[in-house]
Figure 1 (cartoon, rainbow over the protein chains, first blue to last red):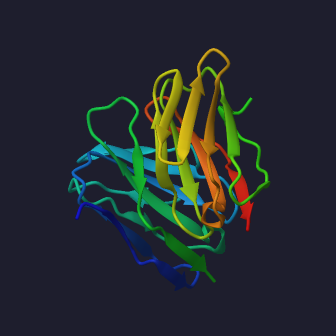
Figure 2: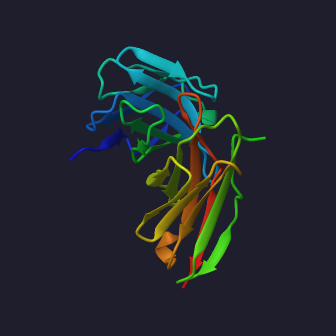
Figure 3: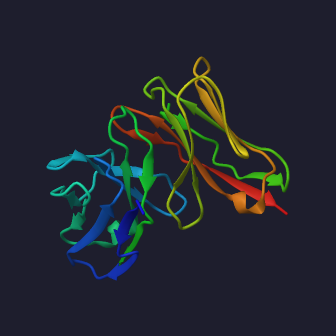
Length: 114
Length: 109
C-alpha cells in the first residue's frame, strides 16, 4: 500500500544529542517536505526537496539539515538538540508533474528535548 | 496581510447542521486550494482540493472557490461530532503550499 512513514513517532532526548528523524514514502512522489508545528499553532515549512540531490530551506529558519540521496527517503538531522527544538515534525510528499501539488502527510514525529 | 487567512474559531455547530468554514487569500497565492482536516495531536489529512471557480462536492463536503473575491470555503453538511477538528486552508504559493492557521470546529451532539 502506498504510504508515507515517519520514525520514530515519539522521541524524548537530552540536550546536545544528535538526532535523525526518518521519513520514507512509497507513493512514487518526487517532491518531499518537512514542516514544524507546535501544539495549536500553524505549520511552518522548514525544508523541501524536488528530487534526488535537491534540497532547499523553507520559510522558517531551522538549525536542522536534510538530505535526499534516494527518491523515497528524506531524513532530517539535528546535530545538537536543544529544548527550543521541542515540537512536532511532519513530513509530506506530493504528486509529480503538477505546478502546485496536493501534499500528503506522514503521521509525524513528536520530539521533546530535555 | 497574511497570504492565507482563517478565523481561528472555535466554530460551534450542533450535530446535523451545516458547518461553514471560510478562508481568504492574497494575490501571492495562486489558483490551487486545499482543505485539510487535523485532529488534535495528529497530522493533516487532505479532504478537498479545488482549482477552478465554483463548487466541488465530495460526499458531505463542498468546497467553493471565488477568485474574484479571493475566498475559498468549505461546507460540511450533516455535521457529526467526529468532524470536530481543526480545518486548515492551503493555497498554492511560489513552488510551495501556504497554510492558514486553521479554524477549530466543534460539533456538539
